[in-house]
Image 1 (cartoon, rainbow, N blue to C red):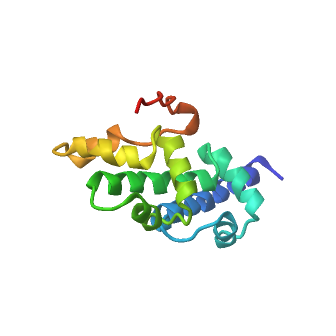
Image 2: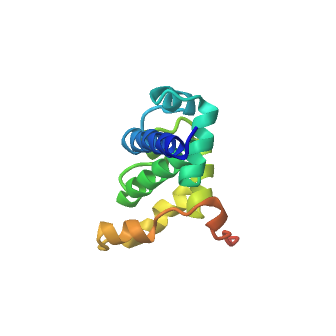
Image 3: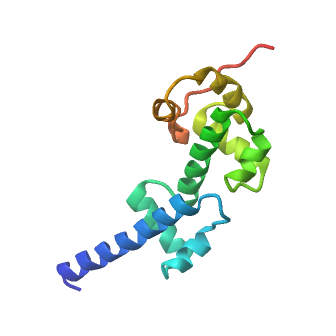
Length: 148
């Protein structure tokens, strides 16, 4: 295979990976799994996962969960929904998994985030969103122990 053919193949694959990423961005609240995403672009689940991680630095599942947590943060800042309602609204089917992943990305449990986000009233949503954007697991600061 010539260098031009290999470059063309990589370019086509990047287009497919972008379609997967765009689908996750659009359909984050729907039931999505790597197998379904892979079928949509005619790849195996393993190949999609490897190539997606190479292109975007994280697995399709991690990217999906980050989108869900970002949306959950916005809903929790509004303050009119329970943590359980937010969990299901963003497409998670397990409150435990949602809470664990939320805590990993945000650095605090969703119930604490909801309570503390009440203090952000009056701050424009564009500023609030940027300041409260979730971080990756390795970037999350350790949560200090809270005294009762």
